[in-house]
Image (cartoon, rainbow, N blue to C red; front, top):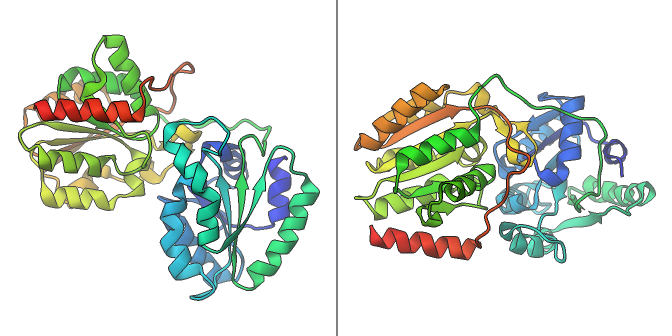
Length: 373
């Protein structure tokens, strides 16, 4: 169905969420219609953040908010749904729109398979009534479901639309760009060159895909890298765990701005522990690019200052390859926790592939390599 009709039927005027590729038509419509507008549309750091933000909107207006997200974010909403929104607590109504990655019977990447299997059950466990929107779902059916939902929302209940792949569409094209010149893939190529045989833990999305293809093109082994294909926002904590357990081995974390924002508290824990062997690289394009390019707030904040405030002894921001190479070399030779923010453009190759090894194979090879160091 057309996303414009879907939005009309839902009838809300405040949306907050974390972008999802399956909800790209919805995200593009919201950006086209509202942009980032505190009265109507806010892209938040993580799904729990969205849920609490939505609760505040309801408290201030008495209206029903909408939270949109990929089903991988269900785990992040469990606490605020169960201990804040639920009718046994404050009874705050909310409409969730959830992209269904890993739907059983539909091919998807390994990180989505189990989450896809438990998507509906998690909603049931949270007492959120759900309806699945598919390609064949009619406008009339969604209107009938929404009529039922309004009765539940009036009682302080929560409801959800679970959106299958290709179920909603939006014809207008939305372009996302910034003024940065470095591409992420070339940035990662420079990191690989300087890091040598040091282990790299890379974040969710295109950064890990590009790292994998760079290793292949270089004829290098993939044993050096742990590709965090899921668990967005946790690569830096994985890297911290590895760095603390292997203090004589230099560990690189290749992170993204959206991931850093999602669980920014990890930076405080890293800064407090100050592992001398950890180099935290944050590639910042100010966008959730992997799922479509919708903006993050990272283009408006000073990540280097935040890192220093969290206790990182050294943190710097670069926006050109000369400074990047200098900072990478310096970090490699420095025995001190370091953070390098790299400001890059939005975009990737159209023919960018995906890892050809399984997640389990990646883990095993990486563990074997770490044990040798």
